[in-house]
Image (cartoon, rainbow over all chains, first blue to last red; front, side):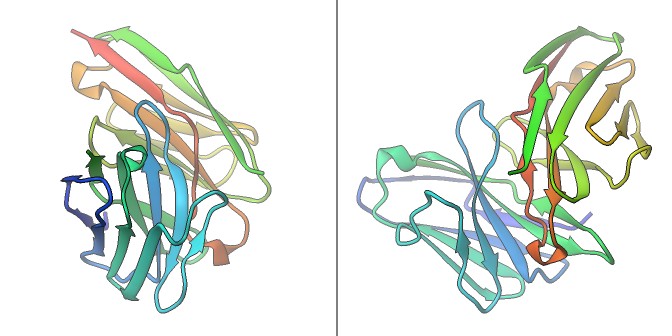
Length: 117
Length: 113
C-alpha cells in the first residue's frame, strides 16, 4: 500500500509555543490530505481537509487561526499548532488519498503525540 | 449527517474463539466502507475497503462483509497478536470530497492466550 510519513512521532512543548507537524506521501502524489485528532479511547475526528495550492477547509468548531495548515506541494502538508495550550494535547494523525477510478482509499501516517506542558 | 456506530465497544476473546465485530452506518451515497486496525500510539493500518452490498473480502484470519446497513468483521481463530482497536469508517458523497472519512468509535479487541 501507499506510504504516508508523519514527523515528529512525539513532541513536548511549553504552553504558548508553536509546534509544526509534517505529513508526507512518500510514493505517490496527494492533491488532498486530511488532518485528524484523536483523544484517548476515542475515535478519529476530522479537523480539516488540506488541498494542494489552496486554502484548507476546516470542520465546524476547529479554529483555523490556531491550527494552520499548509499544503505547498503534492507530497507535503504541514499542521502548525499555534500558541499551544495543555488542552491541545492529543494524538494528531494525517491521511492522504490514493486516487482510483471511482473511489479513493486513505492511508494514514504514524501519528504525532503532542503534549503541551 | 453521516453516522457510524460500532459494537461492541470492547471484546475479550480466548485464543481460537471466533467472533464478529459490527459496524452500522447511515450515509447518503456510500462510496466505500473501510476497516482499519489501530495499535496503541500508532496511526490506523488499512485492512479492507468494501464498495457494494454483498461484497466480501478476506485477509488471513479476517473477513469483512457488507450489507446496505452494516458491515461485519469476522475474526476466525484469533491469536493474541490480533489484539488491537478495529475502526470502521465510511466515505460518502461526491468524489470531489476526496478521501474524507467518517469514523466509528472503534471496537477494542483483546485476545487472551
